[in-house]
Image (cartoon, rainbow over all chains, first blue to last red; front, side, top):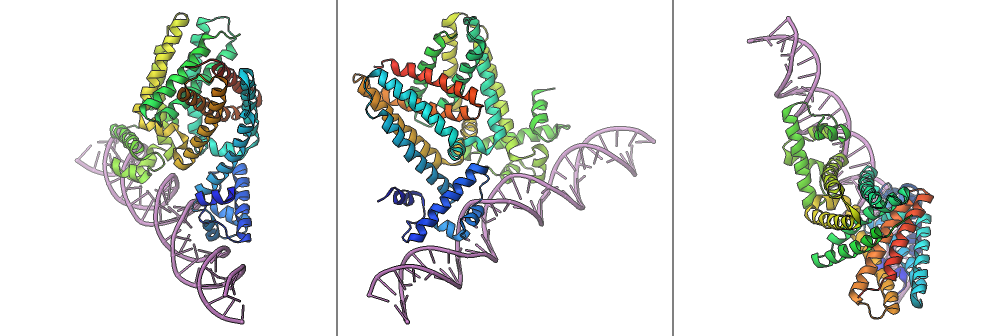
Length: 210
Length: 210
DNA sequence: CTCGAATGTGAGTATCGCTCAGATTATCGA
DNA sequence: TCGATAATCTGAGCGATACTCACATTCGAG
């Protein structure tokens, strides 16, 4: 069972039996990917996909049960690729230095991928549905980060103000991400995640920066 | 100008002039808040809000220009409240110990608020719109986290496997949050955020856990 | 070539955010 | 008290878009 077939079995309506079908499936995904990159998944219309792929609406729905399934298929393909990178990078690390080097490289690599993949950026940034709401959230993080940065500067007046502000903002933003993650788990695991985050960031706050 | 009036000026169509109007505005927000808590903002219909608030669709649109404005108003109210907590907690911290204690308390407090506020949980977790997609992302984070945890265990075989797995998962998840944040900034600031994150997490990886 | 299965088609349906022209109610000067 | 004007309310209907379905077409095995 190929990766294609596995994906199809998961999200597509039926596995393509004929050659032409497989080509159409690829066309659909290519067109969808292009549309998402250009206009965002929210603005992508099913009728537009059908038009650009040169098929009818009805046919499109033979391949994918709904719009979300197209997006999920693209996401799963992308994840499959990036998983390989992660495995390769971490496969045979030796010693702490090796791990740290591999991890650092992986983060940089992931960032480059994010920069280069508008489709994934669109899909994974759930907030794209409402930019004004996203802006409100960011403003809130910035405000809270500024308060935290001010407190940090009072403790260590010699710190670089800009870097302190940047770090405080990031800490707060990641705190919110942790909260969202934690509440989706049960109480015990959620609390453990919050504790982990606290330990990580407390250590960061305790370290002088200049 | 009250807080109410300020919010109304920002997102509502007009400031309520009559007493009954103000009551209706509150009713609308209360009903919306309840609906979001019960079904999620995505499933909340404008017609349903109007029905439950005992007003017509047209009247509802006199108070808020669109659906998103209702959600934003709820979010801004919540942010105003939580901002006060943050200010109070960080206002007069003295010394590093004071900062760390205040910060720890704040994180815990925030977590409790998140647990108790289904409305905010829904609004801020952008992924709510597509639970299946959110599940795919989480599965990916778990897989990547498992690879990272395995590498960590190879370096330090004495570590507690469960805690290592939990930490690795959190690190990866927060890495993705950092990427999403960084790409929304310009290249210089984005790279700085990624570097900050790397520094924070590399230090975490270098610390033995047991 | 024939027939059944696979695949394709697009007009039509359902849903939902949102509008607008007209009805209703409040306010206030005379 | 009353008439006029402004504020507010109403809900049928519009526009957009995801999705369905009854029927047509194409493919491939025998």
